[in-house]
Length: 497
Image (cartoon, rainbow, N blue to C red):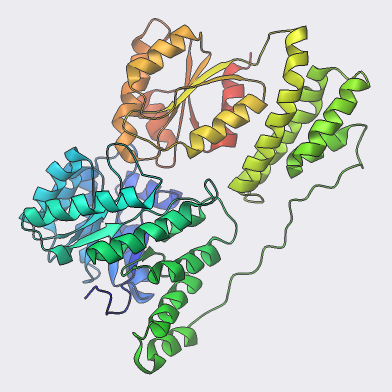
């Protein structure tokens, strides 16, 4: 039973290939043993519902989601949350599901409401409603409330009980927007007070790109519970998360005699070790002006600009500054990010410091030469409004010496072709976070290849759900970027003689 008067219901998130390469590979191979082991592991850790998502780029999602649901139901009888942005996949999975499913998800987009809610009604399922619509994810809480009202009203008008509609106010990364958590919590509070429906939240989104993610997620879970959260989507195998659920129930008066908490704390296990590694650079030990490189790595913007001015005043060539200090500094930042020695906020600070450095040198460089490393046209493909990765890539490319033309988000294939032609692009970069963008990625690559510039322009694709096999073999692009730093490296390789 899910509701404000009941203990929290944990929805296990681990059966999802996004960010889990081993699971993605097993799904691509049609091997569901890892899916089954993840199901058992989460139930043993206390999950009462299991989210099942098989969204891997290029996969036959309807076929695989159907098989995954059957495989999980063969090893456990807990309810399943069938998770896909593809209505055909939802229909295939619901057709074989035994019991009452939870569908993840619908949102305020007219097309989604028209296609998903009838499936929910037909199969007697419950549904998660995401507070986003055709305009994307609203920044303000009041707009998220409006979308939630729209979803609830549309569902109940179709005969879906109000109790079967669960609203997700969408946690966004605080590493990219400092007030993202505040607005999500405010939206939850508004929805709780105005609609009184159950609420869920994908908690791990809040800590994306940060160190100590388990601790951040646990703190946010506690805050969300106070604002209406009833069934969080989380990793129940993480000690902090599981314990925070029981502590929240206990402090909210939903754990009689504190027995749930006592049992949970008794099985606690070891806490993660603190990561004592720092990212503060030591300056002054290298050759003259090497402090420039260290200032950029450490994100010391004012120091970097001051040292740059001093170097130029002393007669150091601007291009030498870039080649000797800026680019090697960028490489160090990229390597540390890949090794998880630094995280998104630190990378953004370093990148912005590099940008300040480049802004200082650009006028001088223009006096000497208009030459750049190349022109890159980038954008998020049609149907996708996510831009964090794209924006970080743009910043890193610009600070590496590339001319970048950013087309923004939700960009149709013909616009990519048109602007790449107009800008005489050397490389076109396609970004897509969701598997629903896969057809548009493939369409855009095809449009570029079939155009008059298809023989010369290089194409690179990146995004959380995209795999190298999909990008290279299915779409026929030239390169796959694992992340923003890798994208810069791959673009340099594509343009090297």
